[in-house]
Length: 350
Image (cartoon, rainbow, N blue to C red; front, side):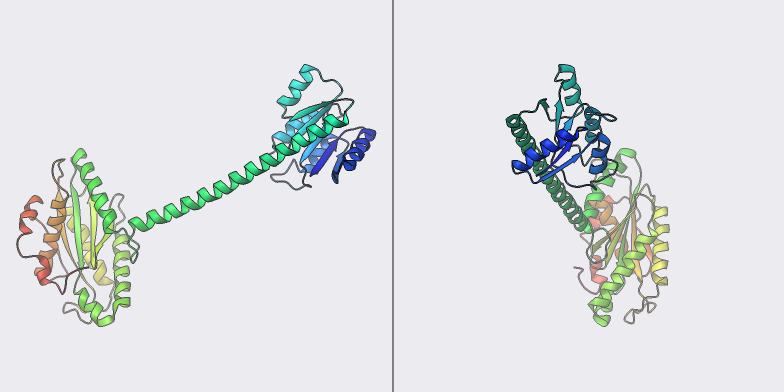
């Protein structure tokens, strides 16, 4: 344990140092002023840059900075504020002690200093310093654990809402968002539009080029859809397999079909080779658009069914096109009992 003696009397410094070293304290430092003490301890810096000190024994009455002002400056320095300070005074009046404790002193010793009292108070101060150090170390450890836990939770949350392959939102998050936006649109009496998107002849693409190339195709399509859907509130998600959805609040059917046509053109312009497509020899998409004016008692699944039916019609009519569902979305729920759009597809989606 390291002790720093601060006293303008060389006699006092030498006698205290000899006493402490005789009692087993091997690391005893001494300076003659408050200014020297602050300089030694690195009081002017943001972090400790002086020798480690565990406790200070400091005289109150010194020229220049007295013990009380020196103590006050120590306590406003982050890396020194927990350092115990034993004030030594030849005038232990109430106002002196009150000022010392207000400045941050841990304890006091009256002159002439009694050896037994000095050692007892010094041991108490050192115990206090050890306890504070343990608390600080524990706090730092807990902060580190909390920070790691926060990062893990953020990563878990990210994995929960994002599709692992494409990096865009997954179907689980889309379902949650659809419910939220449906309720918001109902409160605000605003239209809500949905695009259902399907990559044309994707099973043929996978069979011909292999699944790794198929995965890259999905990533390219997802990235393009995300890049083109930048309006605040719009959300692109992977719905399943080669299917994607775009949810567009405050958007009427005309606006939705306009966006859909832009997406269709840009995917075709990517120029991704598709030798097994009978259309253009490139990767293309079919899109279904549907719009609802939600009501609190209505179901967002009607909007999904309408967009699903619309993309079925787009594929039935030849693919690589946009088809809009006309009429109320609730009508699409009754159509689900009819021919399902997968009858024109190459296989069942995952």
